[in-house]
Image (cartoon, rainbow, N blue to C red; front, top):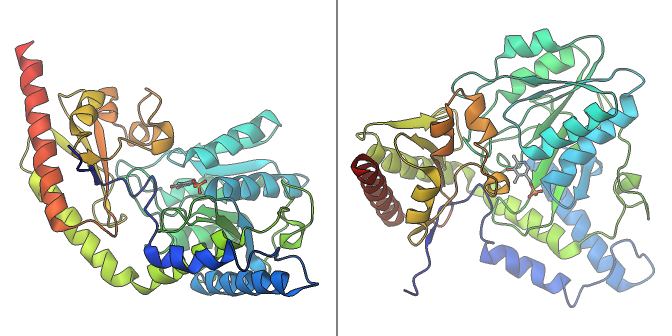
Length: 388
Ligand SMILES: *Cc1c(COP(=O)(O)O)cnc(C)c1O
């Protein structure tokens, strides 16, 4: 069979849009200069391209170009935000607040800081994955320096109330960081309106290249201090050294520009596909929706399935549809998803889950095929279990 499986794993990564590739190509070969070089035209071309990209990215989130620090992706941006703030503010306090359902790229830097003497509060979530704002406000103390809450969850798609969180943080004089890797170009993000102080972005979840992302760092009201985590040539105003990766930066900006321009129409289209898929599963018994159907990324549908083995189900689907249970980063491990566990799902349901990530290039016909295949696989696995 030469047919490749239908790709329905848009939360793990996305294929690059052809228009993004086209925009990137000249910067590999013709305009290959080092953007930090100012003695010749090769450097000037690269520098102009980076400047333009930085402006585009800043404008999309209502920031200024000086507030954008390019990184290798959201993992590095999260590390820079959390460790960089911890190191710059430790004399003012050693308490950080985050949430149990965050990505490992937030949880692990926080755990690392605990080994250095910081105190971290991991807030629980409600059964639908949303943060309880009262719990957040109660957790903030004299010693709190940073709150880190993701914009959109990478497993269940839930959208946290960023503006309300920003308001709480600013009223207590605490910095607010958000990991927006899944949210950028999917929902409107405005750092001024939402009172966001630091925001992590990545290109490869929005049909851009892998290996490029950014950290937004507020410069006014308040001016965020940040200890650099990578030292060297002093690029990015000393906040992140290393030669700027011009083609990736150009691709990132192009992907963001395309994503932002089609955001509204695409959200509607994705929500239709999600409803189509859910309507196929809904009549079945023992299917549980994880998260919140509407306060969610429109392309996300995460289901727990009673009475089947999770790995057996994924194996059965493999030839037809490419998807994962939980996050790509932890799908190698056999532990149940920490996100589904935080929602209160028992071990079987946390294990037997399917994360559908519907993306830009998926069609209603594909959704139909995927739904039918998954339902057939679930029925036959349940039947086999009964016979044993
Ligand atoms: C994908 C993802 C990351 C990691 O981003 P990279 O650019 O791959 O390092 C971090 N946080 C969330 C929420 C993600 O979905």
